[in-house]
Image 1: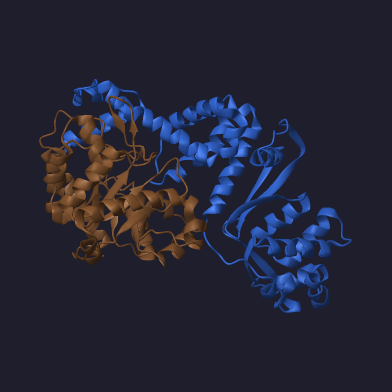
Image 2: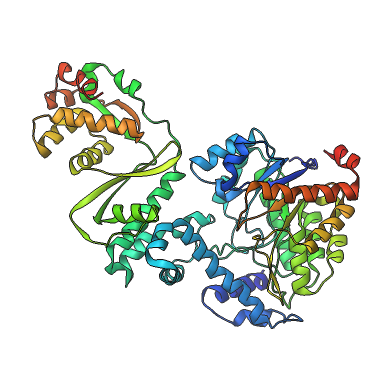
Length: 284
Length: 284
C-alpha cells in the first residue's frame, strides 16, 4: 500500500501546496513535459472551486466584480481546502472567513451578503416539512391559546445585519447598481426560509424579531403576548402578537404548533379564554 | 446481490436543473435520465421534489463523483449511507461512479484523479469495490476517466487495469467514449486498443460528451457539443459492444433541452445505422 498511498499524498500536496515532488512520478508525454500535464490538474483545482463559490455566492461576486471575486475566492480556497464529499458544502465557511480575514473583515457588508446567500442556499434544499396551516391553528380551543408553542419550519434561519445588506442584495439580485454600503443606526433583523420551493428572506421589525426569537425557543403564546406588551406597550399588544403570528402562518415559516405541557403558563399570562379566542380572528 | 445485467434503457440525458420545467411540462424524446448522486444527497427542497416527479416518468440512473474508490483514505461510510438512502428513494437502474480517487487525509479535491496502473492499486480497488457492493447490496458500475498524466510506476495499460477490476470485483463498466478519446489523444494510444481491450459483457452504459482541445492536449470539459471524432469512436463502440444504454453528458454551457435531444437523436441514428432498427428494438 505504501507506493499508492505515498503517490496520492504527493499528488495532493502538488495541488494544494504547489509541491513539485510528484513530478518525479509522472512521465513526460510525447507532446508536452510533465509539469505542463500536471498543470492541467493544478489549474482545474483552483478554477473549479472559484466556479463553485461563484455559483453559491452570485451576488457577492456581482458586488466585488470578477477580479475582486477571483482574488477573494483564491484566498478562501487556500484557507479552507474542501473537506466534504458534496461540493455544495465547500463554501460554507465563507461568511466567517470574510468576517475575520483582512482586508475583507473591514467591510462588514461582505460577510453579511455572504451570510444571506448561504442562508438562502441552505433554505433552498433544507429539510422538508408541511407548513402550519391556518385551519390547524384556528382549531385550537380558545382556552388553550396561551399554552400554544410554535415549531419553526426547519428551513427558517434568523440573521441580523449591521449594514444595509438587504438593500445591497436586492439591488444586486435585480441587476441594478447597488447603493453605497453603510452601517445602520439600528441593526436589521431578517428571516430566511423556503416557501413553495423558493428560498426567501424578509426584514423583520424589531418587535416581531424579538417575538420570533422567543417563539423559536419554545416560549408559549401567552408569554409572547406579555413580552410584546413589555417591548412596545400594552395597548394593542395582543393584536400585534396575533398579527405577527398570522403573518408567519401566511409566510409558511412555521411547521407546527402544540400545547405546552404546563397549564401554569395560562395563569401566568393573565390571558383568559375570552381574550385568547379573539386573537386570531381579529387579524384575519 | 443482484447479478442480473441491467436492461438496455435506450438513449438518455443527464438531468440538469435548467431543464426540470421542460421535462415535466413536455414530452421530450429522452428514454431515461442520469442524475448526479451528490446533487440529490441533500435534506429536501426542489431538487428532490423534481427527482421524485421525474423518476415516476422515466427510468433513473445514479452517477456519483465522490466515491473515491481508488483512494487510500478509508471508505467514507457516511457518504455510502447517504448514497444508499438516495438509491432507496430514486430506485435507480444502476449506480455508477469513476475509477479514480478524489483526495486523501480528509480532503476532497472534487476532481477525478488518475490511478497508477499497478498490481498494488488493482488489489486495493478490487477490495474497495467489493466492500462498496456488499454495503449497497448491488453491483457497482465504474467509469473510465479522462487523464492528463501517466505514472512511471504503471505496470499495465489502462484497459488491462479496467478489465482486471471488472472481472475480479465483479462489477459493471460505464464506457465513457469521450474519455477514451481524450486519454488516447493525451497519451498516444489507439482508441481501438482500449475498445477491444475491455470485456464486452461488462459494459452497461456509454457516456458521450464534448471536450476542449488545447492543441497539445485535450481537457474533458463537457461544455461543447460532441465532436465528429468522438462520434466516430461511438460508432465503433456500438459496433463492438452492441446495444448499450447511451447518454449525452453536458455539465457546462448547458444549452436548451431541444439542442441536447437533437444531439441524442444523432446517437440514435448512429446506433440504428450500425445495428439496424430491429436489433435496437429487440434490445429495448
